[in-house]
Length: 432
Image (spheres, rainbow, N blue to C red):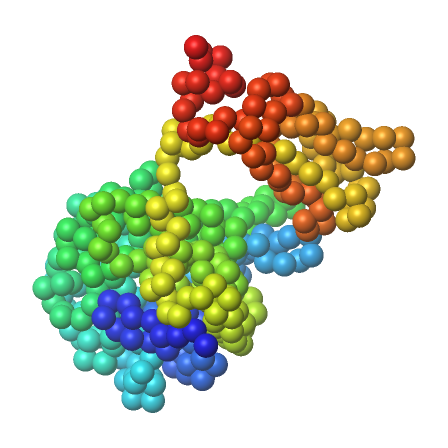
């Protein structure tokens, strides 16, 4: 059996699946259920201060959603702020959790005004509860930025560096910085976090969004007394954004040694494996737990373990970061690579989606007979993969790589044996 034991920021956990800061990690009851179910660690929902004023959440719809055709949640939007329970209550509960689950890491998400006394006052107070580390919330895109916190800090690298340094002065515990995706280049805030002394970064926080509009009330949803506001979008729909940003940090030479906790749409063991293959040392899960409950941890751990066994990976470190060297810039892609679509007639159900998509919006590379038999026209196919993506039958349409020396029907030229030289590629109109 593969060893799923994870070590992050020097802290060990039974597996790499942590419950992310959010409603599932809001109180002792939730966290206790998570650990009983088998989750590896938890980032306690954000604690903080706002000039001494208590946080008040809306007493109405806090979540919105985007659904697929089968009512499956593709993405969730929330307008909830940090915990609205007393700081003392949260700390008392953390003490009990750490007493009963000493081998399960509890990091605490923290937010405070951008003032040194605020941060250096609250951090030691929380540390006394026995937490294993901190996650600085520099990512919340709603409510808190209006108060000069959350993404208002995460979008300014100088602020990230400054506040991180304040926290590092106030504690010897590990500190990771949670980054906002609502920036042009994620590398800059990551470098600022490292320069401030951060032990790790976690990403992504939620994406600023309005999920839908009530066309009767003419107001955004979720709607509170006829009004709405932008919230934070999360779930499977943000996974591609998260994977890209994790990769950008993992590829940067100056950030190679900075540990990454991957967040954003992790729903299956495969999602987790993809994040870790691209450089994340562990993953955090929120939306999937809110959708299916904590019991999904069984599928996450068993699926990851089985896949690792099949691939011959004995431990997580055997594949963490393994895909990073295969991520490159567009200019370095092999432009001599050639493939063609292939339709399995035994699997085809004759729906015609591939034909309609290719004929109307792509390269007119699929023919349809009078009896609705669909076939690929090799001379027109550019292997764009659109037909594969729209086909409702898995593996009905696949891409076949043409071996070097094979005649490309589009050009009548043999696929080159030497790859990657665009200057002599037959498709390059400037080739000599």
